[in-house]
Amino acid sequence: MKKSLLLLGVIAALAIGAPAYSQYIYLDANHDGVNSSADVLTSTSTSVDVYLNTNHNKAGTTIICNDGVNPLDIASYDIILHTSGSGSVTYGTWTNAMTGYAQLDPPTVAGPDFGVGYSSPAAFNAAGLYKLGTLAITVTGTPVLSFLSTEPAGIPSFGTGFGSECSGTDNPNTITLGIDFTDADGTASSTPVQSTTWGKIKQLYK
Image 1: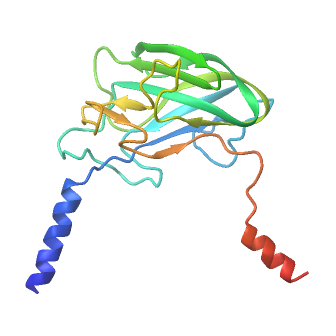
Image 2 (image 1 turned 60 degrees about the horizontal axis):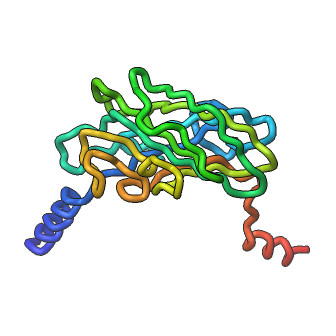
Image 3 (image 1 turned 90 degrees about the horizontal axis):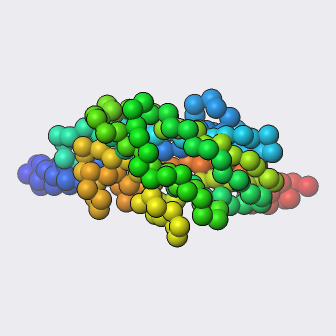
């Protein structure tokens, strides 16, 4: 019994001390407010929306700051997008959707990458789901857009993340993709991924 209680105490201590970050940032290409397999870029695509949930992960689980005191609110954001796949994306105008936010890092294009940053000079926004903004695009072929966690050459933004009263692991008061959280969804591929195992099974029954 004593050993069981001791084990529970150790587990509880580890849980309290572990980072509690797991935000969710995603792209919405069909403008329905969510990310899904329907968010595919085509020649008819003219823009993508960027959303950030500061206190929920992709599964919808509520997250608290690892210090247990400060909120996972937001007062700034930086995003970096990268084009890959078959085709290309020509980046256009970035339209900020966060009321009262001012430009921090100017919209910058460097090859297949795009970066931008905004901040609030006055106050923090409460923790929650936010539409950060909309990026105008012109699409050729069937490319894919994804988030980068660190800045490539030519992009002034530090990476993808947001400023918060909750302190980040490496960057002070900044919750950073690839360091503090990993839940990030870009646009979907236009080519469905086929299961190799399922293909082999079908061959057996031919």
